[in-house]
Image (cartoon, rainbow, N blue to C red; front, side, top):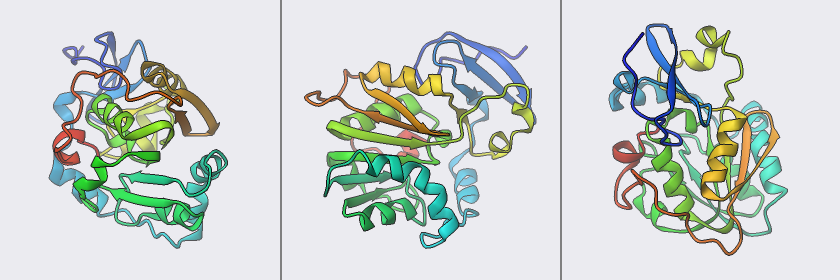
Length: 241
């Protein structure tokens, strides 16, 4: 059995167990939040990550891609009042979701460590933050979610879309696991646990979508270990994309 990894990168507990080796990669399971994560010694470097992202073809005007993103945009828009200010966190080279939400009358800002590295976007506050097909890339998700909590205004929404990990038996052959830049996998229980840590509410309005709301009247949750520096870049501190 491999030597035990450190703590869970999502909830920071040290209660983890060895899950399996798949494709030469070592995976661990958190006993508390049920996240599955790659052994820290095997995390990809920045050059390897960027190489993978440059292969993505996400056209903001592609109707199939927009339909895919509607799984998160539709329930989010149903919960937002008019003219909100939002952040498309990890927008990638083709910020389709930001375009869709802008078309619905909202003011969108972008952040991506490779394709929209604007630090001023991390110095504002937002009514909502979207994080689509990003959470699975995070090397330090606990720090990232703590930082996003600080960017959310009271009553604000965090919308996350990522393929939920549900089948341990098929995990080795799962296409989502086989993507080299995917290093952490979530279940519904993971997001409910995460929301509880930050005193957020959590809904699962569609498959692979979590909508979490910061209570009205609540400022940022208590500081957590490894929180992102306000002046750091995603590549240095979020380690996400």
